[in-house]
Image 1: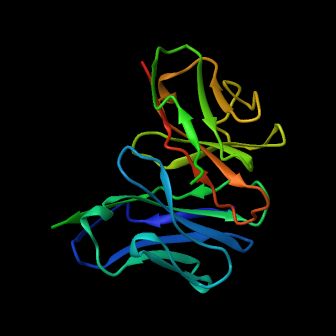
Image 2 (image 1 turned 180 degrees about the horizontal axis):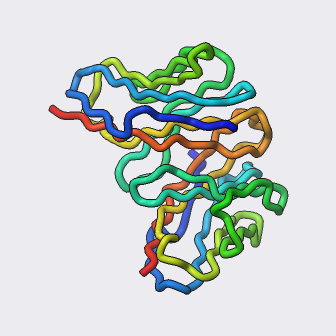
Length: 114
Length: 115
């Protein structure tokens, strides 16, 4: 069965530090992978997506993620955290089937301290 | 920029009451979805809808739930007899026709509180 695992429900970093949010997937078919961000009391906003083109994907707000098939991972990184990055981050996976639903990980809360 | 809109943003209801949550998907999208997020938990898939019928549903989507596209623009989620555990944020999403990547566009959510 397809699934997504986010390691670490809560990550804390200092402003200016590297952000690393981990995501591993399980899939028997090539996946499409996404990171969504949810700011407090808001909806889900797409950060970036992997759709079988370049394995290093750049998204909004300076975030990027690398698809590593050998490790079944799609970790999210940002070189320098900003206070405004504090939010909930969700990794999600879907598959090459029209209409199929996204499957979300449990989410990782990112806290940024000054 | 086109967006998915949801109403109401927050609804408080008594246990056992019927609730209808409304969504207006992006106009050229034909795949529609409902997800829910119980406070502090993951975003869970409820149901997907295409061509006026349910294409996929999860175990959560039992007989208490129904979806409908009553006209050319709205997509609704009905909960017939609400329970305390139905309290959650409900997200509507739509998907671009012809897209196989699975990218969904989400609304801001409707917070349901069942007392």
